[in-house]
Length: 335
Ligand code: P6P
Image (cartoon, rainbow, N blue to C red; front, top):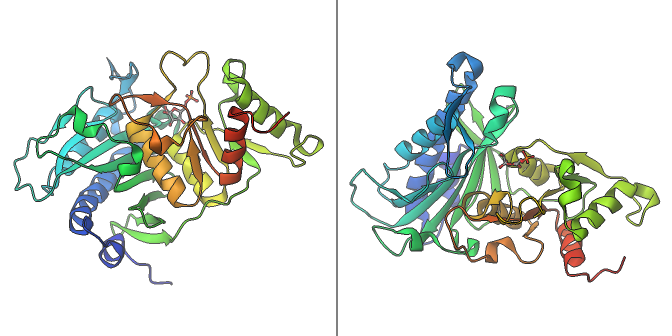
């Protein structure tokens, strides 16, 4: 059997630069948190944690028991290294102060969605954890310290709790995927140097929103649906798992384009997906794998945030498809 490199070994060999020591320590805690979340989910209905709490999170979404459990795990595990000066979670209104007083060797911000796609848990469909690491100018960060464009991220990654549990991450030198060997309790390198195919025949979008989309998105999807008889001269396949981590992972592995565009229902909110802890980390990963990520109007990583829970339109994946979508938004390609 091939001897796989553990994530610990891989990071010790590949993390270089000014953040390498801090990232090694922070990623160790993130790995531990994701292992614990995987165990918490693995019990499924046996854990008695499938239900809703009746409470709502800052997004106005009904909180699942596992939303809170996984949020607590992520906060608890990521205070140990002493490098994280502040956190922000999809599940919490404001910046999270670090309660545990450690010698602050460095100052980093950890932003995360502890359980993205959690409404899928009780129907046993893959869900994930998404995280992003920024540098902080202050040892006691306040909201303004978090308001950084996605281009300033020093690390981003996700855990996918699927048919196997995986961790996929980038520190700005490509994208690597690790699979959890539950028996050994360790992640091992299974997907080195992931690259998104530049072309695709597969799109992921919630088609039920068709009538609310803007014209460029309707045009793009119409042409995909026209298939080989249409101007694209090829047939397309569609996927929609309603779990961003699962969609983006599939796209990293075999290509595709993931779309949650702005629509007339979402206009007042600015979009469905959150910039700081969903769109930005996933865009960093997709770009590092050779793909592209856009709001339709601009590169997602260049959006300057104006709030911790700001939402943006998201279209990302195979570069040539994303470029076509951008061209339709700027009407550079005539009908
Ligand atoms: P819809 C999950 O709630 C999520 O934030 C993403 O993971 C997913 O892509 C999207 O929302 C699904 O949205 O409208 O299809 O339920």
